[in-house]
Image (cartoon, rainbow, N blue to C red; front, top):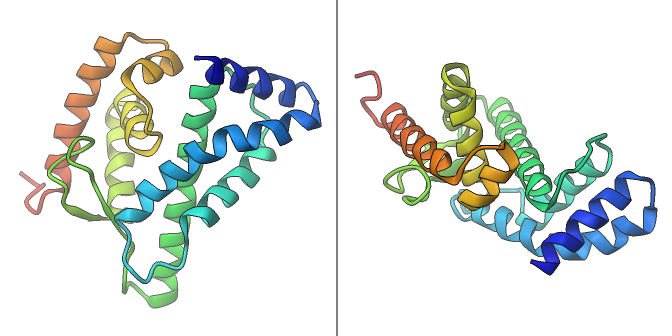
Length: 188
């Protein structure tokens, strides 16, 4: 718990303008961000041009330039996860444009997160997540924080201001909904 409070303190100090706080913060969150990025990259095609370290670095550079009032470590990880998601989606869109539809980036949806561990095109996943967000924004955010952020139920509850039991319910519904939408016959 000490590490979490240290991260929160450094985030607040950084936002308050203390530049040295950023230097102290980076090593504390870098491993966590690398683990998230490595998890994303595990499901990618073998020839993927974006590496986990590059994904972390690009995300961190984007976060440094944001004007966000950080609440705590979980809030930072949630925003970082969303940033990595956007980077991967933008990268996939650029590749699709570049190759005119060929070699779309694939991500594995871990069975404990979404469904049955099947492969799904990251752009298809993005489209389905956008549909879910239009249908129910809270469920979409819970999925994002769990799948992309790797946050625990308690951390998601803290970030969203809801109970862990509500996180569980929302996540179970969202996983089932996404699995149905991503299945081959998702039009049922």
